[in-house]
Length: 385
Ligand SMILES: Cc1cc2nc3c(=O)[nH]c(=O)nc-3n(C[C@H](O)[C@H](O)[C@H](O)COP(=O)(O)OP(=O)(O)OC[C@H]3O[C@@H](n4cnc5c(N)ncnc54)[C@H](O)[C@@H]3O)c2cc1C
Image (cartoon, rainbow, N blue to C red; front, side):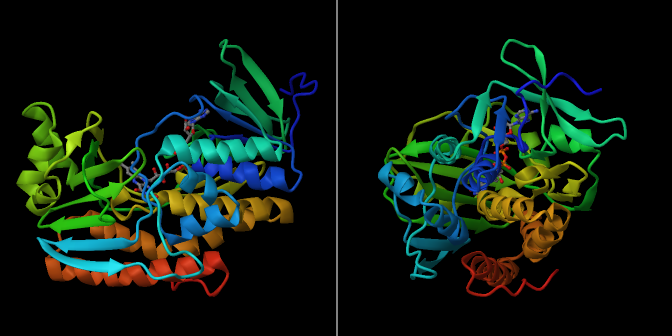
């Protein structure tokens, strides 16, 4: 049924106002597209995610004129990445590549708010406390808009020829569209993370130990985000024994990480991600598309979801402008395919220290290929897995 839309008409409705949705909306609005963004969260709120950006993500922020806002909010520069294999450290100092000489890990409260603010400045309308609750379709079943639940609980119909789901890994837009999983990962980590104060900025520190991983990510307010990853069944057993304690789990599974935590003071309670295997979903159909985790989720062990979301926001926005939305998923999939397979291998947490280093070499090559594609210095697609 077509409702009475009055002025409630847009060119595009984006569901989800975080890194994928806000970026897509900003890019479209900058091209003069009339965009509505809805999110049932409130602006500037946190979400379950650590937030290390890789070079391609930092590149996108700089290209969009937003990196200065991240740096201006005292986000510490990360100039070294250390891989610590069962206590043996391999330190890599960052060189300037594609004009990016430092990485950043802004809190999501800052990153998502910066992107949403840029979308609003570009002319997108943002409605918070507002949830997508289904498509509006015409007599042939084609999507012509969305039903949204307003903060008062009323259902409103909004018209647009394209509804973009940027609503995360449990996407309601994907469900409404009947989007099928086209490729599923085998493995998943379970991850416990916590903010701590009192640690020096030693760059990104990625730890690997038999059957577990962990890391330290310097972020805003003089804090570091510390995480430990173990198989979901191990985490489930630990939970049966009582409340999860990050330092205890680190001490037991990744002792060298525990050494990194000397002098740390808890600045938040621990947050648990119980685990979810990665996937690619069918990400475009008549009147709808998916971007960010809604269309493609990869295990957080490689800390690449936000960087990918920024890349895919641009690919999708360009496709909307060019009228080639149906082609967008194929490009995204070929850019992400190899990385996805390697991430899945890493998420198995069943490698030897020699094997994990080989996976890292391959990941590095896939990441560099992606980075050069994003920077436009080499548009050859990474060889698919
Ligand atoms: C434990 C963990 C650690 C991670 N660490 C990293 C890392 O270090 N680096 C990295 O790059 N990536 C990391 N990731 C991945 C990263 O969090 C995601 O890739 C990223 O959040 C995807 O952004 P998104 O905008 O697609 O979705 P989300 O960030 O999930 O945002 C979706 C938005 O949609 C809204 N929404 C959902 N349903 C509706 C609805 N029906 N109506 C209206 N709004 C709706 C939600 O409120 C939310 O605001 C991690 C993920 C996890 C789980």
